Image 1 (cartoon, rainbow, N blue to C red):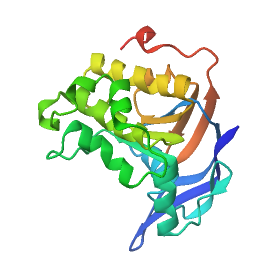
Image 2: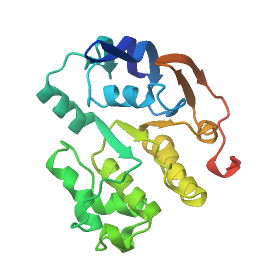
Image 3: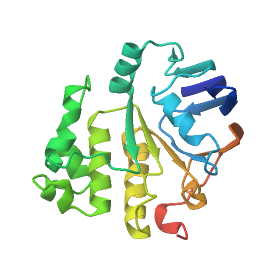
Length: 233
């Protein structure tokens, strides 16, 4: 089933007479429950795609459908409802609140998500059940990233959007995080989209989308993606 469809989507930013075409007539179709990597150099348009898909921005032209619903023309309030119900976010910066415990950071989503999952269960899923009363400053970088993943999972989103989720992690911790994200697609049926410039991560993907200069260069299905342990990091 197609969960994401971009049709001739462009995003243009203007400042005075200067025009920057961050995304240029992008057309793309993705199936649900897949581990998808969007690959390209800095400034290629990867994060713009993620922001549009996440409802953090709106296209200048074109149509974006998610689960058959056109999100291109939603109002600000409608986009807020869409973000709460449909998408989760994992960023390179963990965005944890330092004065809240691990459990409290994850439980925050209960205030916005219409059908949240158990915070305790999600922390157990990421291997942090013994750290629920710790504060972010007491955790390693990899542990903080796992808290952010648990928080995103607790929203129970259909789509999880990850912007360079391993960029600040060492290789061992990065592999642990990627294995967790991959299991979410395989075992929980979530659609996982990772934006990165790391070619190695693409070897694990069901689908690799390559972006350059605001254009989608290719969208390839990999019949035999590698496991995280098989990738030469």
